[in-house]
Length: 194
Image (cartoon, rainbow, N blue to C red; front, side, top):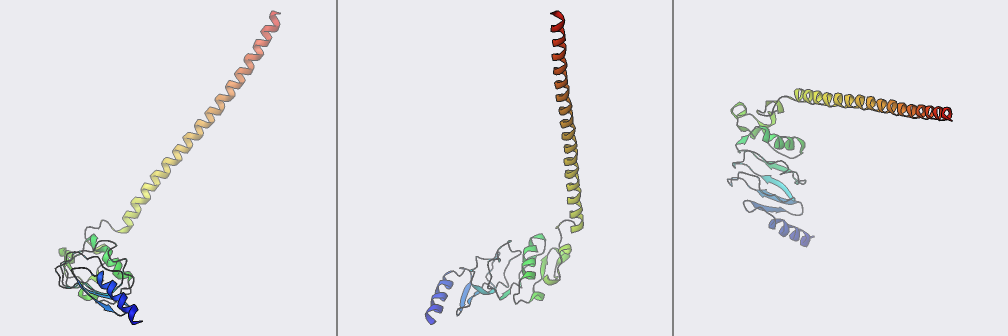
């Protein structure tokens, strides 16, 4: 068992980001400490990360998907960063809201923009985040109107196609009737001339 934990620890330490320091929690995973390292982005983190410390850096946002692979994460600290709480912060907010990780969200605060400055991250709602467009109901209405136009256009095209099909059927009947009448007239003329 000791050999297994030593092997696990060595391979995990090798995957530690260069800007961070890592420690092994026996067979559970890694403690990744990236605090106070002047980081502006989240480094590539090993999937075996159990505890993550990113506090007191210069991070303003987290790229979408950057934390999704951390399935063993139990504790995280991202306080002390100048978070820019515009639309780009929605990924981090949604990730925090969906994770059962231990954290102290009251310490995580927005730095910019001015309207959200010093607001606790946990109290931030989607409609309060500036530059995210209109609230959801307006967007839904816009999509509904667009779909209504598309469906109306489809109905007009179907009506037009059925009208064309009817006209084509009548035209073929007229040609068939005309051909028969022409044949009957020709036969009458042939019989009179004899």
